[in-house]
Length: 249
Image 1 (cartoon, rainbow, N blue to C red):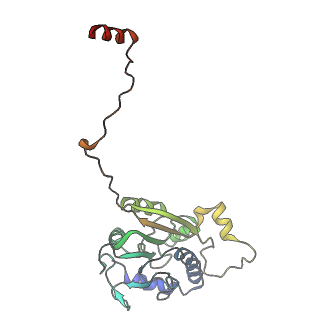
Image 2 (tube, helix red, strand yellow):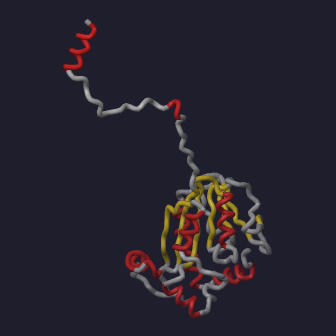
Image 3 (cartoon, one colour):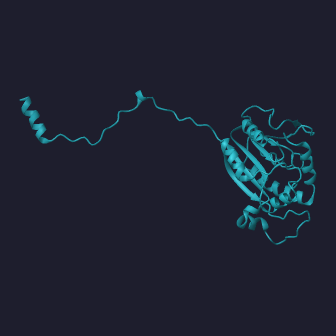
């Protein structure tokens, strides 16, 4: 289950300067992705930042945040046992939810269960390498606060393939140094340079996948198949034709 205490620690950190810059960068990525997501229901599983802040610009008819047990919210549930029917949700957002939990595989499988065929699964995560990964290593796993484990984008890609989720979009972003002080980098587009020249040093990644639709290829019954045309047979010779006429006479 999600560590409620760790989640609250992370929420407090998001109010810091570096936390606010992280949220702003993630909000831009999510808003861009939500422009192409339609349907009836969108779920954000796990609180991250302001209530409903990340999905406030959703184009779906209904959007709701599912909170973990012990947190105040309209919908409270165990993320590994969601109170929704199979194939009932058009889109799901997991904002670092897998990294805040000790059961990421169970949460991912549950998200797959409630997602409709061709539904969207969107995931935010921290990269285990780069400057942010180095600071996490130096702080003995305490940065960012509340994160139980960092799940790299390549590992997550493997997990989703096992669930037959097809990755359609993958971005690495946020190339600021992991320091609390606000950096004055006016005039330098570090995001554009980082994505082009050193993508592995990004602090975060965004992955968007769609649930595959099972297809069935009909097999034509053998008794309805057409007769095969056999090629390469020798044509009858003129001598054979004459013999046939003489014999008939």
